[in-house]
Structures are given as C-alpha cells and as structure tokens.
Length: 257
Ligand SMILES: NC(=O)c1ccc[n+]([C@@H]2O[C@H](COP(=O)([O-])OP(=O)(O)OC[C@H]3O[C@@H](n4cnc5c(N)ncnc54)[C@H](OP(=O)(O)O)[C@@H]3O)[C@@H](O)[C@H]2O)c1
Image 1 (cartoon, rainbow, N blue to C red):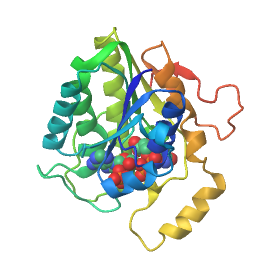
Image 2 (image 1 turned 180 degrees about the horizontal axis):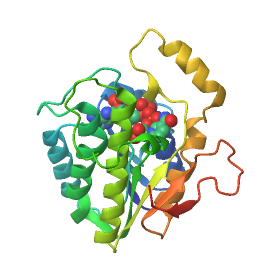
Image 3 (image 1 turned 90 degrees about the vertical axis):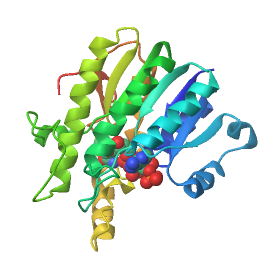
Image 4 (image 1 turned 60 degrees about the vertical axis):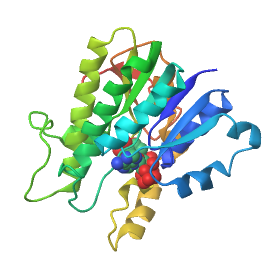
C-alpha cells in the first residue's frame, strides 16, 4: 500500500485519480480548498474506501497555506510514495494572490514548485512526482514564461500557456537534479472539465461545444496514472489523442516541450 498526495482532488481529474488510487489499495491524501465540495465527493465512497482517504486543506497560491500543509505532512512521519501536482487554474479575469502575484502563475507554476520543493524531504526513495502540463505549451512564450504576468492586456489562455510551459521546463530540470526520484509530466489533452468555466455568459454554450470533442476526465487521467506508476524519469506522458486505444495514448515520450 502506497501513500499518494493529490493536489486539487476536488477537481474533475484529481478526483478520478483519487478514486483509481483508492481502488488500487493506496492511501490518498487529497487536498482541497472547499471542504463542503470535498465531503460531497467523499460521500460517493464506501466506508472501507473512506478509510483510505484523508482530506487536507491547501491553497497552493498562498505560501502560508503551503507551509501549513507541509507541516501536517511532516507530522504524519509517513514517506510519500507519489505526489500528483494536479491543482491548476485558468481564471477568466485578472486576479492576484495575497502577495500581489498573478493568480495563474501563483497557482500553476510558483505554488506548485514551492510545494514540491518543500515536500522533497518527505518523499520515499524512488518516489514519483507528476506535474500536469498542457497542450497549450505549444503557443507559450518559452523565453518569458518564468516571468509572472503583470499586465496590461490580460489574455487568460496565453498566461495559462506560459505557466504550464514554466512548470514543464521546471519538471525537466528537477528530474535531472533528483535522480533518486521518478519525475515526469502528464498532458491530458483536451478534457471536458470545469477548468474552462470562466464566469462568463457563454460558459454553458462553450461547455456544450467542448463536450462534443473533448475527452471525459476518466480518459484524461490515463497518462497521469501511467506517469505515477512509471520507473522512468524526465518524460512527458501524453493523452493528446482522443482515441484511448491508439498506440501512443498515455505512453511516455522524452520530456522536450
Ligand atoms: N481540462 C483540460 O483540458 C486540461 C488540459 C491540460 C491540462 N489540464 C490541467 O489539469 C489539471 C486539472 O484540471 P481539471 O481539468 O481537472 O480542472 P478542474 O476540475 O477545475 O480542477 C482543478 C483543481 O485545481 C484546484 N485548484 C485551483 N486553484 C487552486 C489553488 N489555488 N489551490 C489549490 N487548489 C486549486 C481546484 O480546486 P476547487 O475544486 O476548489 O476549484 C480543482 O480541484 C489542471 O492543472 C489543469 O491545468 C487540464
């Protein structure tokens, strides 16, 4: 039985991976921002399954919240076998965290990086860390992706793409620095989840359009589950094709974003 931390486990793909890991007999430490949402999801599980699940609050965009979470992990005195960095955001409006850092950057790249680095001492030898990348990296600005967006002209998708590129490049570097661990990225492809709800009038129409060609969350997580299980390091596990049965679905490639 392994111990896995899943960030953003109240999200569509985070919760799918949490259920898969529980069904495989693992212990899941699932992070959430909204405890009510977490309890509604937990109600789907049997009493036996619930014993394998522990919710902990974490706002990955806030340094204090990360520090509090890491302190609780340290107190468990249990080596962490897998860390699935799944939490991510695509805000429709420009917003900042309590330090004034743009929210997409603070969540998708900076907070995820801070959390990972603070958890490194608690990872089991040969443990596995997976970062969630994105197809959007293809239209990012690779040279400037490590700079937080400061404005003007906030373009949500472009800012999002840059944060995912920064995270992917960081994962590649960390894989080289930490040869004792298996460090990889997953790209789920385009998946029908609430990520694309931007608080706009056209959200419902966009969601209906998306459902015509996007994958379901249970399909989107196939590469992530493969990446969590792998003994490889420095790879990108892609699920870009909608065809779950295609030869390369969810299988690794070298991490060269
Ligand atoms: N959907 C796609 O097509 C797609 C494609 C490529 C990559 N991805 C990536 O896949 C990951 C999962 O997204 P999803 O599609 O499953 O969307 P989702 O259902 O919206 O899940 C996102 C999760 O991240 C959590 N989160 C957001 N900001 C956070 C913060 N500051 N602190 C802690 N948790 C936070 C959300 O928490 P709440 O539940 O509290 O909102 C939610 O649980 C994300 O990293 C996303 O960028 C998605």
